[in-house]
Length: 151
Image: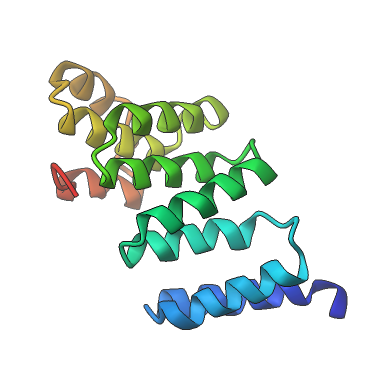
């Protein structure tokens, strides 16, 4: 059990994150990192927390660390793209979401984020082409109707 306590701390952080108690979530994610510096999940979750509270620089640092620990994580590149999109760094966001799609080609969340970036950069034809690749039977596909044009 002690061997996996870092995972317990990470899961407690996730619970606090779901409750929007970001200070506690950050505290537990940091505890998880201190116990296992090589685990990428707490860095990924810290990036999401920092993104949610508007600390984009901290979010960038955490997601870069997560990617360095697991460069095959589609989710990490998708989160990186979200961070960059919120900073209006659309070209870099586009590169990150494309890396996510190289790993997981038909991931709905990545496709939806790519559509958002296309809207933000006024690439309407690419947006329309992509629209037909989305699996609208999935619950996350409804997000396409509520995407803000800029964050």
